[in-house]
Image (cartoon, rainbow, N blue to C red):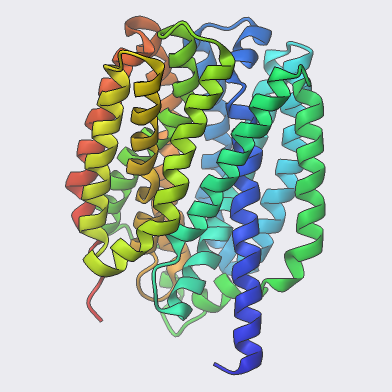
Length: 391
């Protein structure tokens, strides 16, 4: 690699860190205010789960089409499309909450899910390519930037809620930040990342359609379990603190922030453990930490112990998504496989909110977390599929 190429790769890496960060920022600033959204829309916990499911529907629509889209137009085009739709979606959801319109929030959620699905595959394909070129584990650090953005977004959302800044203003300002950031940095990404990998000397049928192998299915089941556990932390920790601990929305936001802190730390520093012990051991050890964290939060005698459990929960699920995606990217023409495994992950966002919401309504949110504990066990079992392919 020449000096010019190295400089270009360094700039590309920095841009991806920014994109992962801002993705997390835009998502969590909304999620941390879900108790307020539920109140503004006059919804039950179960109904809130159905509203959250709308986002997963949008995500699945984009994910099912992201593989061929990137193969034809490139990962950068997917990022542009995802971020553009997200800019609009954030304003729509904010407006829907302020005017107490459930249909408007549902439309905004569908658009948000579509944007996250398309943009997520784009930045992960770019990140996997950077990781391959660097020859070391980097995707967890990229996702660490996402978690840092999520942590920052939790702070922004909690602060806005505490000083009574309505959701429309919050979402609009963040949408402008997203738009300006994309416009200033997009040129630093190559335009042919996914296209290049999709135009090898394989038969045409292999270029346009990804074969569903046993390994991909196992990776999919593993990422499904860990993503359900991660999504439960994002969606329901704040609700559990308000409903089951009977504490304020501000303390709920702080608990959410502890979970995000655990994710940030693990994603930034967990890559060294992956390089040393491999993906499989890292995934199973992480799942064990997450399991202990979930159980600690369930049985916490005080909010302070719950904060410890939330942090362990966040740390435990932190490496799951990036490592399963990294495993899917092994070999040539990875964009299709990344899209397939990502789709399994986003199925979790489709089935998770309504199923966990109904269980939380019936059993109580803390009791529903026992299901999350079981999902972490499932993910640990299927983590064996993340073993690197022999070359």
